[in-house]
Every structure is written in structure tokens, then in C-alpha cells.
Length: 302
Image (cartoon, rainbow, N blue to C red):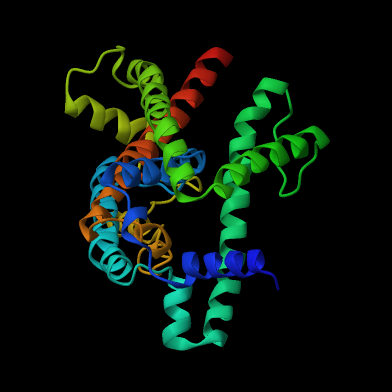
């Protein structure tokens, strides 16, 4: 091994095995952008519609998602962030020190499987949105039925991997650019379709207050009845889902890899950009959009 190879190996060791140095730490704005971009994503459309299909009520959705996502934020802030800031190491390095190679390999393989499934789902849902631009038919099976759709998925996946290759700073900057637009798209979609739901329920396109919103929600969006016509999930299930949706990253400490770059453990609160605007606003907006689109199609059909 020559001097250049020795230096490269030492640099890699320093970056992964040793604590993050002070000059590589980032401020709270980086984490706001990073978590916003991560948790205001295409899969929020699917999850938001799932609550409608599971038959949650309007009150349970609003209160349950608020409480559950606040619990998730606090989990990052008081569990993951303090450990990450104190050690300045990723979970894998930290786990290797306290449990050895065997446990680290087992944990790595478990995460490979989990994140492969999650990443594939997110990329596929993102590609489903792109398919409209190319007039690709809907993919309703668990396997692709259109070769061009496979190409779109590969291209979207390539872009995601390409950005991730440039590391934490590149991902956070990319997220900071995309996140505001994602917020606008989710919110605008709900606002555009809300008049159709309002007219169908209360006979007018304008809402006079909060009571009108609750009435519309109970009768046409989160009715409390699931897709099988039976009573749906309740408040505790909604809270549990919202809190547990990212268990692997806060209770599971996976996000030590991100928060080890934080200057303070209080930056765990920056996860609120993803939880409150993403898993709260986006899930609610997705439910409104799904119900509003269904109402629009029904009116058009008749």
C-alpha cells in the first residue's frame, strides 16, 4: 500500500470511526431542510389516503396526528439527538464499540432489508406521479406491467442516489430547495379540492368556520367508517401510527448518523419541519385531496 492509499484509508477511518470534528457541524437550518425534504414526500399521499380507508374520524385524525407527531419530535429531541451529539458517531460505530462485530452485522442486514423496502416504495410512488407526463398506464399490480415505467423508476432512483452520494450537506441543501415547494403543493391541492367537498356536503363552496370543516370531514372524508363499512380506527391507533411511523429512526437511533452533525442536541426539535408540516399537514391534505377527487369524478360521471 502506497502513501496515497494510506492517506485515503486513514481519511475514511477518521470520517466514519472517529467523532465528527467541530468544523463539520451544522446549524439548525440544515436540519429543518433535511427533515422537511425527508418527511414531506410522495409516500405522504399514500399514508394520508390510508387513514381515510381505515375509517378514522375527523377529530381523531386532527388530535391523534398532532399528539403522535409531537411524541415523535420529543423522541428525537430527548433520545436520539443527545446520544448523537455526545458521541458524534453513527449508530453502527457506536454499536460496534459496545456490542461487537456480530451485533453490528446483524443490525446492518436488518436495516438493509428495511430501507430497501422503504426506498423502493418512495421511489415507486414518486415515479407514479411522473408517469402522467408520459401517459404511462397506472401500475396496479405488485409488479410493473409497463417497461417504460421501469425506466422512469430507474431514472428517479438514479437521481436520488446521485444526490445522496454527495453526503449530508448536499442532501440538506437539496431538501431546503425542494421542501417549500412540497409544502405549497400539498396545501394547494387540499385548498383547490375543498370547495367541491364543501358544496357536496353543505351546499356551498365557502366554509364559515371550524364547525363547517368538521362537518365536511365527518361526512365526506374521515367518516369513522372503513372501506369494509365497519367502524374504523380510533384516537389511540392514530396516535400510535404517527409516533411509530419513524420508530426506527428515533427510538431505533438510526438518525444518530444525521444528528451527530448537530451543534446542539436541541436541534432534534428541527424534526418538527417534517413531522408537523409533513406527517401532520401533508397527511391531512392528502386525505382531503383523495376525497375531493372522488367527489369531483362522481359529479362529472353523473
